[in-house]
Amino acid sequence: QKEVEQNSGPLSVPEGAIASLNCTYSDRGSQSFFWYRQYSGKSPELIMSIYSNGDKEDGRFTAQLNKASQYVSLLIRDSQPSDSATYLCAGSDRGSTLGRLYFGRGTQLTVWP
Amino acid sequence: DAGVIQSPRHEVTEMGQEVTLRCKLISGHNSLFWYRQTMMRGLELLIYFNNNVPIDDSGMPEDRFSAKMPNASFSTLKIQPSEPRDSAVYFCASSLTNTEAFFGQGTRLTVV
Image (tube, rainbow over all chains, first blue to last red; front, side):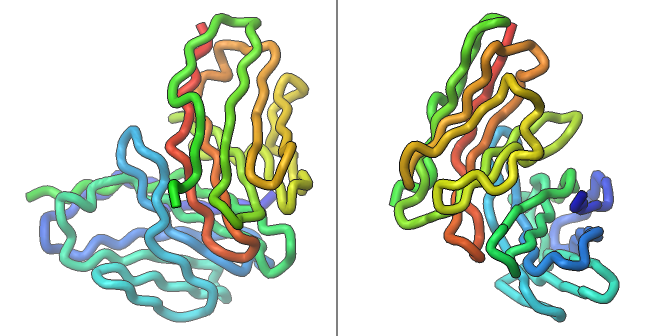
């Protein structure tokens, strides 16, 4: 059974701070990882994807992947109140043609002004 | 592109009734996921199709649930008979194999 575990939170940071979200995964065969943001009452929205070891930066967001440690993280710099949402980590064995996408339980982030 | 389209957005039904949820994929996508989200269990994968073929249905709770892809752009998830414990938000998501998945707006199902 493929699993993704996220730090349960909730996480609360002041505006302008760095928010750090983490997850670990159980299946070494997983090839691709994704971070989704979900506002209350809305559907998950893709914000980052990462496929290889190291860091990937997109604006205020940086995703980090360490396949040896089976660890994925998301850093949000200069956090804004509009970043307050639940962040979902997802993994996929898309190195094959199967492509099953499985999610962690999510970490609720609150950014206070 | 209109994105992934789900219908209905809200459904309230009585226990024992049949419920059908619908999903239209993004044009050109060939992978389709059905998820169920609850506070208790988070986002659970129910079934995954690739090129209209069900690849993994291990998440389907029981025989009351069934899913089909009658064509490359459309899918249905049926619950018959429905039970109160089926109350949840059901999402479908589509992707092109080996790329990111995009979610529909979801269907909020309440079984009373």
